[in-house]
Length: 324
Image (tube, rainbow, N blue to C red):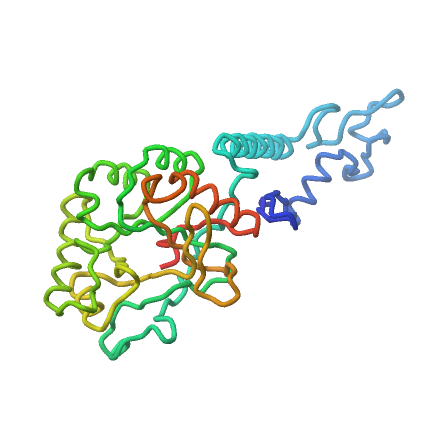
């Protein structure tokens, strides 16, 4: 038997235990109602009986009032699950959420094939094997991916909130905004967050020559290697603007994917790429490292708005890299 997490019609998590033959056997074992072989049931007087005045349990059955070991194991698992759910609810309440965020499914064993979104290709996209630009990952999982750009605001409460709630996210960093505090982003890395390339100085790349674009992108790859230990394989062009030179330059220094976004969330509103102005499975959501200097709120305020929306609509937040 195995527990399976499902969402009910209100978006809440619950656990269903799917039972197979082993579970039916466990039910019979716990009930103690099965008759023993050769007619040695609970009321018989065969080799396992006691004659008049009661009977012993058949061989292999627990004594009266005791649970079989599998039943005790199941109860222990259910108890641990209840405690974990209560702890998640308490953390959510502490951060001002109406309900705990939904847990994402396990990463797909077979990764989806990610290609350039139709209309977002450049000349020679396939022939040159250029990194695809995409806004949504092809999946039926009811998940979205949170991505955060640039690195200007460095709010320690944001780090605590995301760690407490165990929310995955992906960041795209520009060196001119993070070089005053690389340590802040090392803390993210140490918490399992993937740090990615958003150029050295956040320029409008299509206005630059190939050589200058390569300097912006590949130069940031070297900063990432020096400061955080590895050159990333994900790159987001500033403002979502790019041309063939952009993707050629990115490929030349190890970039495999160029995700942009389908929705953008601010501290006080959402913006959409699609006409239906709604979330879809696999959507990439963009936001920025911003605070009260530019927005009417903090990074935790922003996260709260984001999580309340996606949770209410039955979406979990998954790790983008798990699908690539």
